[in-house]
Length: 137
Image (cartoon, rainbow, N blue to C red; front, top):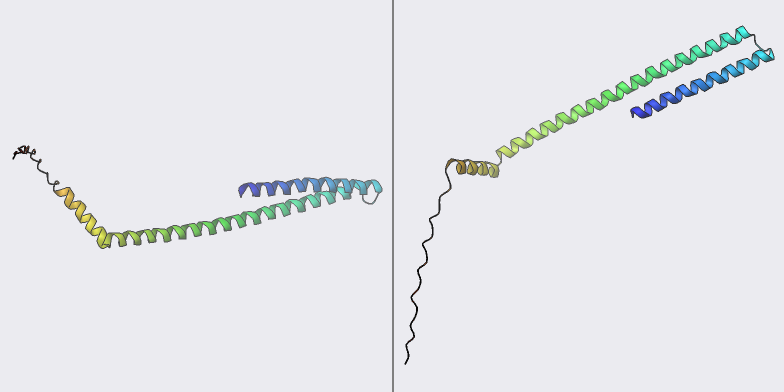
């Protein structure tokens, strides 16, 4: 957005330069043709230049004011969004802390941390079964 504003201002300055050149050219032609005196042409050029500077200054002031307004509105929206999200997060944390499954899981975790897990007894080695003897008939 800043780049767009810079380009717009530079375009305005460029237009002012082109306009100044055109004014000087036109006034030069009026002086050559004898329509105005050189002194009158100089006064007109100064008047046009002063009006151009005034308009440029006014445009810059309006642009600055508008940018401050837009920035303030964006900041306000951002602040209100952050406030709303913070409240929502706190509500969710409260609901989670008060939910039954969470309390059970917390209690089980605390109980597991208090007492060690029971040890299993080692299994006794298996005894070999006596071999069956076949009897002949």
